[in-house]
Image (cartoon, rainbow, N blue to C red):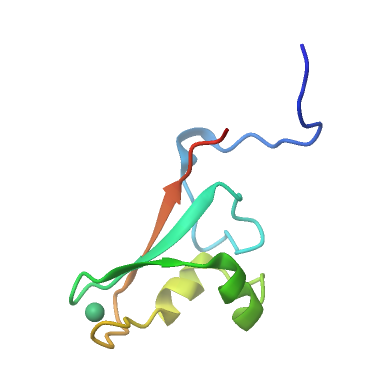
Length: 89
Ligand SMILES: [Zn+2]
């Protein structure tokens, strides 16, 4: 049995993400983040590298979610941080 990569961590069962404990640095690479506005339902992808450059990679996902500002209507409360799991390979 061959391993293509020697270091490969298995994702947790069910892919439950604990946003309070999960930080940008620890979020697996195969998750893509999206922000959705609660007020106008505007949705936009979030570039992880951009956020890390501005806020650092120790920012928790929960904190990031609270900082989201909608580019459509300017709403800043109750916005959702969505995680999309990309197919691997
Ligand atoms: Zn909005």
